[in-house]
Image 1 (tube, helix red, strand yellow):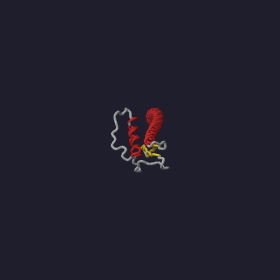
Image 2 (cartoon, one colour):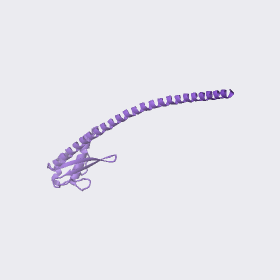
Image 3 (cartoon, one colour):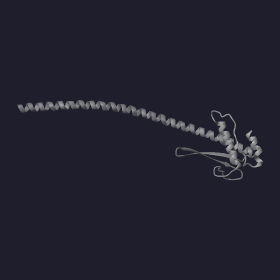
Image 4 (cartoon, helix red, strand yellow):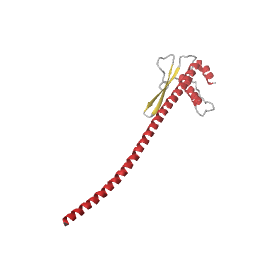
Length: 176
């Protein structure tokens, strides 16, 4: 009989331990469920933020492209006009090309002239007067498109020193 009572006490003790362990596991389960719920809410918020950021990047890329194209068109038009006006021809054209190298935005420019079939890379050639005209026209364009507007004048030291005498009167008229 005593053996039976010991077994009952032992079983009651084990039952008490299991009950405590069950309570502890229920508490852990509740805590983990709450953490899971909070994590799921956070994941949804992060997905919404990611969507917002993706849309913002797409919008900024579009704005960058439109702005770049507008700048390109304006610069090409004005510099081409300057070249054609000074050289009294409609066969000159100025071209800008934008590209990316890693995170850097790069811009290259060249001039198409009537006497050469290939474009003239002004940075790699000693183009003399043409380089001077393009340089001056670019400075004028930058002053015109700057915001806020830059009021003032351009200081030019021998801007047309490399320009043929034949074209200097037109260059002077262009500056006026």
